[in-house]
Image 1 (cartoon, rainbow, N blue to C red):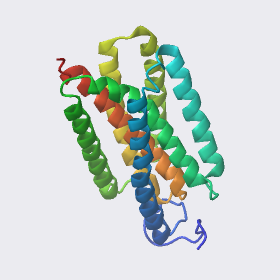
Image 2: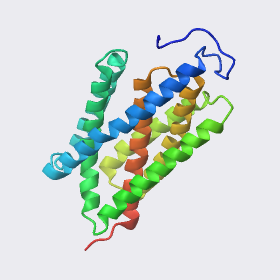
Image 3: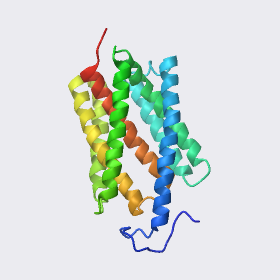
Length: 233
């Protein structure tokens, strides 16, 4: 069956012209690929912690490597999303993101209760995702208008994060983390609703969007828990 269906069905699709069958298939494939994408993320984080590969990427250098690598991968994913190379490129991106996350994980593991904080952040992120997924499944209204506001919020967060790299404010980090949890939780609802309404029919693009939401919520929770609950020896 073709990826796009051009005949309207009777279920709510907000004019996208995508059948309920296809929307459900895209959602299933997205959930499956999102689950698979966590494996290279964990592997990348483990390698980063074990080797200390990213510990030297501090300040401006770390920012350049992270932003340059992330945007390069996202560009490559966009270019290959309709081909057989799309999934391997996405999984390579999630490995890279795991490597980039390893520096924060190593810092949290430096606390006496570091392992507990990581598990708390993992559980909190899973809870947020399941709550947002449940919410998106019961909301009946079109949420497409949220997109521009969430995008503006994400840009403000990114600019604030760049500034804070050089300022090094703990209070600023806490504020950014709280804001990021709120914004990317809302993004989860928005992105899932787009799939359910037929606004996103490519499961690789859908997985990328949800992965970034989950990654940012987890990273923000980890930073917040590390600041607030880290116990030193």
